[in-house]
Amino acid sequence: MIGVFDSGSGGLTVLKAMRDAYPSIDVVYFGDTKNAPYGLRSREELSRLTVAGIGFLLEHGASAIVSACNSVSASLVLSLYEVLPLSNVPLIEMVGPCVNAFKGTNARVALCATTATVESGMYQNAFHMIGKDIITVAIPELAGAIEKGEGAEAYERYIRAAFAQVPADSYDILILGCTHYPLALDAFRRSLPGKPIFDPANAVAERIATRLWPREMGYGKTDFYISAESAQFRGFAAKLFPDGAYTVTVLP
Image 1 (cartoon, rainbow, N blue to C red):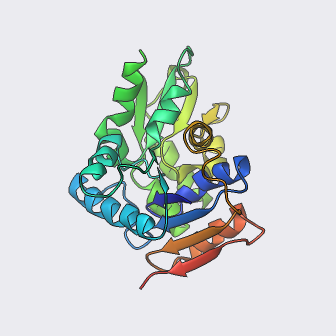
Image 2 (cartoon, rainbow, N blue to C red; image 1 turned 30 degrees about the horizontal axis):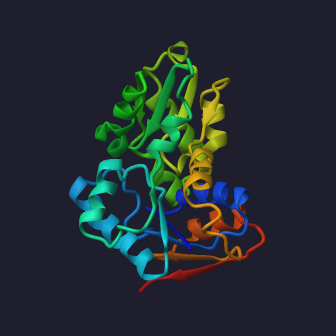
């Protein structure tokens, strides 16, 4: 069973890509809706919340982990091995698969993400290792706005404000460096017309093929656990998985 960890609803976009590619995988998902968003939290807070969330997934039978929250940096994910029983548990994070997708390309890349993701430098460092410099743009309010369901007008306002000082001709493609952002894809397209947009979720699904498939074949079961009731989470889940073949449990 694959465990998917996220700060809330954003990981649903990663799960959608996983499920489209591998319908038979069994998934247990923990969304920390009580503490979302993670993008403005300190490293210490992120570490505590991540240990708790991934620990929960292991307790509920996960034999592999996808850390679908970009704010949880690759270095923080690696530190989990010191405090959790992960020695035989494959762990896939967001940065590596995304950066690998751009190896050998000439595209000039801009990445938009939460403040925590941008300030961690994890994407900048990873792209530098393949010989690329990237433009990074923090959109501090957007993940929280999506989690709360503020609506398209608010999303566009935050996006346009964040990109106001970024010349349109300074990059060729935009990476959505927060898994919440694909839930506002139309707002990005209206705010930044004509710019190709890259969603790393598909790259993560491809990584599963090389690391977990076919070992993690199952019956297509999905169990969602959330740390606080969230109508937004339920709404996004219903939209992305309209067959309703899942359960949602709100933790006490």
